[in-house]
Image (tube, rainbow, N blue to C red):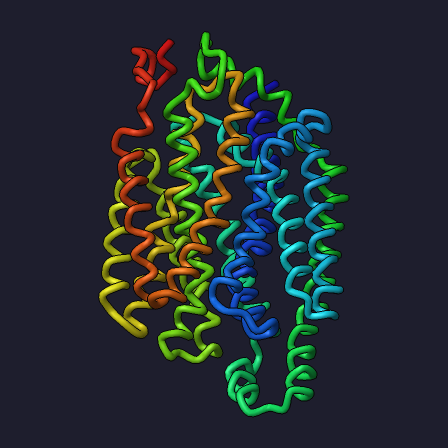
Length: 432
C-alpha cells in the first residue's frame, strides 16, 4: 500500500473515531446538568445526587473486561456498533424514568449508557494510540479530546436550557407550595428530558448504522503491529508491568478529578450563592479550558516538549488551582475550579501512551484495565458529595490535592517503573 493510501486510510479512521469521541463528550458531560436537575426533581441531598456519576462511571469498572471479550468476538467495527446500540437503550430508559420520576430508573439508564461507552472506549483509545508513532500519540489523543470537549461544552448549554429553565424560581416556589401542587410541578420538571433523550436515541441509532457500514479497519488487524512495534517480551502476565498498574491508578485519580471539575461546578456555584441560571454555564467554561489545553497539546507535543513534561506541569497546576479555590469564595473560587479544566486537559493524552508502552501482546488487556480506571469518576465525586454534606462543598475540594500529587509522581518516575531504555530511538521497553 502506498504512503498516500495509508495516510488516507488513517485520516478516515481518525475522522470516524473523532465522531465517536464527540458522542462520548456529549453524553458524558450532560451529567453536569443532570446532577442539579435530578437533585431538584427527585428531592435529593448532595450524596444522593452524585450517584449520577457513580452509576455512569461504575459501568466502566464492571464492563471493561467483558468489553474486551465482546471486541474479540465481534471485531472492532461491529463492537462499536453494539456499544452505540447499548447507549441508545440506556437513553430509552430515561423516558419511563422521567414519566414516573423514579431516580432508580434514571440511574439504571445511566449505567447502561456507561456500559455502551465502555465498549466504545475499550476499542477507540488504544486504536488511536497505535495509529501512528507512540511519541506523538498524545497529539492524536488531543485531537480526539477536542472533539470530546467541544461536545461536552455544548451539552450542558443545550440540556441546561431545557432542564434547568426557571429552576431558581421553582426552588423558591417549592418552599411554600402545597404537597399536591408540588408533585405536579416536579413531575413537569422531570418530563422536560423526554424529548432531548428521544433525539439522542435517534442519533445513536443512526450512528450505529453508519459505523456498521463504514470502512473502519478491525482492531484485530492491527494487533500484530502493536506487538511488533513494542518489542518482544517474555512476560507471562499483564500484572508484570508495574508502569501499567501505576498508570491505571493515575488514570483512576485523573478521571475522578476531571469529573469533579466538570460535574460538581454547577452545584458548587449554586452553593456559593450564584443563581442556577448563571451556574448552568460553568461546566462549559471548564470544558473550554480543556479544549484550549488540547489545542496546545496538538501544537506543542512532541515538537516543543514531551508528553511526560506536559503531565508534570498539568499535575502541578492542578494542585495549585485547587488550593487557591479552597482558600477563596464566590466567583473567584468557581473560576479556579473551572481552570482545573485547563490543568486536566493533557493528562488523559499523556497517561494513556505512557501506560501502555511496551505491553506487546498484552496491549488489549492493558487497555481494558485502563478503561476500568475510568471508574474513578464513580468513586471520587461520591466521596466529594459525602464530604460536601459533612463539611462544605468548598472544603470538600481538598480531596483533589493528593490525587494531583500522585499523578505528578507518575509523570516524574512512576511511568518508568519496570522499564529500561534501549539504544534504538531511546524508547522504553519492559525489563525481562
